[in-house]
Length: 178
Image (cartoon, helix red, strand yellow):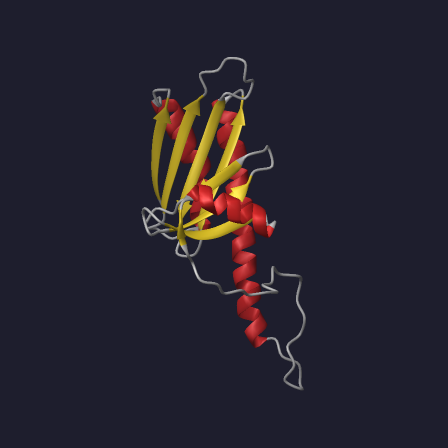
C-alpha cells in the first residue's frame, strides 16, 4: 500500500502523519502492495463548526475506488473513524466478490442456482439517444420527465453529464473527469 498524506489549511506534522500511517496500515492486509491511498486532512476555517477536523481518503483498488470522509473536533478521532469506515467498505466489497464467485459454483443436483443473501440487482435497463444540450436545458427536461436525475450530452464539451435534484433544493451537475 502506498499512502500519500496531504494537508489543507494545515501543516501535517510528523506525529499526525505517523499516526495516520499506523491507523491506515490496518487496511494493508486487505489491499495489494501497489494500491494507492490518498489521505487529505483539512481544518475548516469556520469556527462555528464543531467538527472542524476532517479526514478524507480515496483508495484506488483493482475493483471500485473507495472514498470516505469523517469529521470531528479532533484530527486523530477523525482518522480513527475514517479507518473504521474504510475497513467496513473493504469487508463489504470482499464479501460481495466472494458471494459472486460462489454463486457460479453453488448449484444443487438439478443444476439450479441456490439463492443467496440479497444483493443489489439491476431490475430495469433503458437505452436512449443523448441529445446535445446545455445544463440549463437538461434541468428543464428533468422537470418535464419528473425524475430525480437526467443524463445528457453537454453541447459545449460533448461529454456525458448528469443533472440531478438536490434534497436541499436546487440542482446539481455531474461532469466526469477522464
